Image 1 (cartoon, helix red, strand yellow):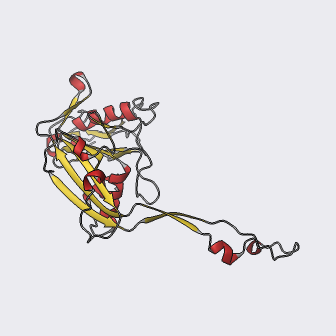
Image 2: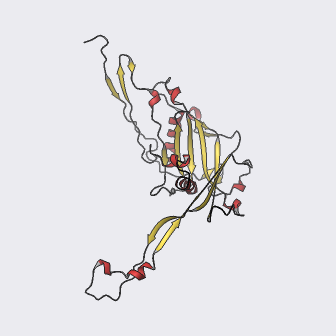
Image 3: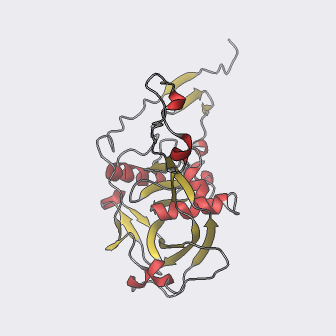
Length: 290
């Protein structure tokens, strides 16, 4: 055998037990810092007067479902029993009932209290989330050219929270061992303990090929999935929970985000994506495949 024979030892790391979050039933966050979803913006005294950012969108009302009430065709005799004869077509057509949801103008504004952070978890394992961004959504029916309604303050309601944190970037991971626990990993563990398993959750083992020259796996190739608790189903218009939770990371910069989003915030993202702002960042995060 030639000098420097490469010995390949395939080590498949066992998939972790995933006890964290296994028996926890998802309970959506009810708000933040004593404020409930749906509270009006004017009730948040500590927030600055000017938002750090504002976005807007418009969409048509979305058809939710169509029901009909069958009006029996009483003119038919007892001998006729075809399925097409059960209902009187014209009378039934007049009784079609279509339900719609969403639609109109949406305005999203974000506010930040300078210096405010949030510690997620206790002790050495705790993670500081900063900045903390409050989100407010206003929605009203009508055309895009009618302007802001006079009761805007009553419509502008607490609809989401965005918590940022700094994790390790891909470049930093190149200098760290493959088993290194990142800040993203710690945040995920805490979310699992608090909210249970997100949709499609699966812990993946790691394959390491050892050679005489060292391990061939690159720590920078680690996968950072986007995890969602109670995401929208069906057409993706809105979550069915009071609020969903989403975790994601930009591996290039190492900036991570935990997002609490109510149905109204989901509608805003849907409107942006489907009515004029294709590729909207918020929509991509809420819907993109891992």
